[in-house]
Structure formats: structure tokens, C-alpha cells
Length: 306
Image (cartoon, rainbow, N blue to C red):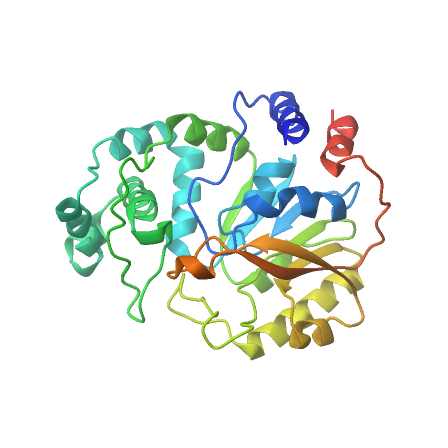
């Protein structure tokens, strides 16, 4: 979509970022394919942007808000965000050392089982994380119950594990942004009236085989979904603007029945069975009214920014 590209380029340039940043890791449930649909349901204005399940951060990099708090309970992911923010040149130099072959991949993959790994610097750990994410099968990051990375080699011809231009763009985008490791309910510590909270939790499984919650060794179950709803209610009570993504299923639509719900269609990009990758319906839950027009909300953000 040429119009969207030009708008995003202008938004980046206004914030002093040469290239348009995008997520530097692939993440299950990432929103890059949905951005043009989500844009139609974004609030026209807000104070601080808060994302309690930041993951790859696609919506953050799309909006590029001046003030933002990014939260995730995955310490490996948050370390990588902090390293890109504070040590991007050293990270790039380390990423250039990696090799795209099976033997080397498994050597790096298995380092987290060793005592040596505990002594690695945050930069070296972030480099390993990005390399594995880009070179493993299907480009996902998953750990087992012991917290060890367990995805096999992906056999990609030319994986871009050192995307220098994007890493520098992400580095610029993260300046003056607060990055926090912790549970999603940590957003209650920071959220105030007119802040915009985007929640993209592990989705409620619509079938026995659709659940994917192993980015950390803890799972996200039905009780967690209900607790998340309680957090949403508290944010709503405070006067925050809330947007939440989740599965299109009876459990979720009933749970958020007192909120505005819109159905969107997404592409399922991460699935071990290629035949099962395709269109899937999701919901956007919000607590504010949308003024629908043909203008992308991002255009409004640019006009209102200094």
C-alpha cells in the first residue's frame, strides 16, 4: 500500500528517524499484517502509549509515539530491546559474526544449557536471541519448560539476522522510550487518564491445536484471560483508551460483551503446518467510539505532532 508507506516515512522523518522501523524479531501474533486494519480503530489522540505485551512491537513502530512504555514478561526479549536501544553498534558487530549453517546454529542454540552462558554479556545474549529467531524453523522463538530454546534449524538460504538499517532505525525509535520487564498488570502502575493502552495477549485457543503460549516457560490460561479482563476494567475506570486483540470466539466475545467489539481478518503466519497458515478472524475490543472516515489515523497523529 503505497499511501501507507509514504505516511509512515513522513512520520519517521518527523521524529528524526531516517528509515521506517519495523520489528527486529518475528513474534507469534505479530501485527504487521493487520496494521492497515488496526489503524481504522486507533484513537485520534492520547497522552502516553502503553503496551503491556509488546512482543515484536509492530504497532509501536507503526505509530512511533513520543511517549511510550513497553512491557513484556519475557526477559530475553526485553534484554534485546534494551540492547538495541543502548548498544546497537556493539550488537551489530556481534551479529555479523554469526553463520548460517546447521552445525553452528545448534552450537549457539545449546549455549543456554551451559554454565558459560550465565557469564555472557547482555549484548552477546541479545545477539544470540536475534540470530536464533531469524534462523530457526519458521522464524519463531520458543522455549521448553526449563526455559531452554528448542526450535530446530530453519534451513533458510539467506536469513537476514543482521539487518543493520532496521536495527539503527529501531535504535532511534526507542530513544526516550521506557522498556520494562514484568507482568502485563504492571501497566496499572503507570496508566493514567487519556493514556492509550494496547493489549495483545496470548490468544484464547479456538481449537485444541491452536494454542501457542511458550515464549516463556509459563503458560497463559483461561484464568489469566479473566484476570486480564479485570485489568481492562480498571483501566477503563481510570479513563484510559483501551484497544485489545484476541481470538474471535464465544469465550472472548462474552467476556468483553460490555465493550465495543470489531472483527478483523488476519493472516496466520506462524504455524508448523503450512497448509494451516491463512486467513483467521480476530477481534479488536475497545472502550471508545471511532469516527470512521477514509483518512488513516496515522495521518492525524502526524498533523497533531510537533
